[in-house]
Image 1: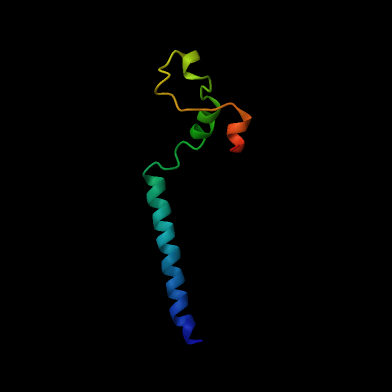
Image 2: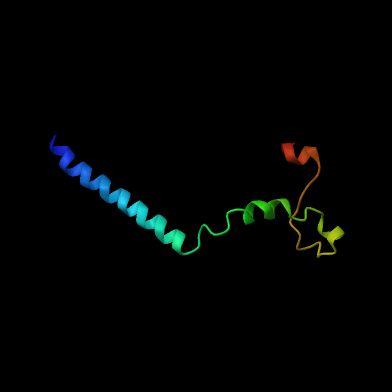
Length: 72
């Protein structure tokens, strides 16, 4: 029973801290654009750099061979 005298105020303080953090994040604009990052994945240009006209040397290396993906 004596543990409740410590645990109840501690849990109320933790909930208050979590609510304060959430309100600070929402005030700073953290949750303004929830759909933009999800749509940006769909709109990425997945063509190789040489087809886009970009620099081939700076493009990330992507292998299309099945043997290299399996590690054999």
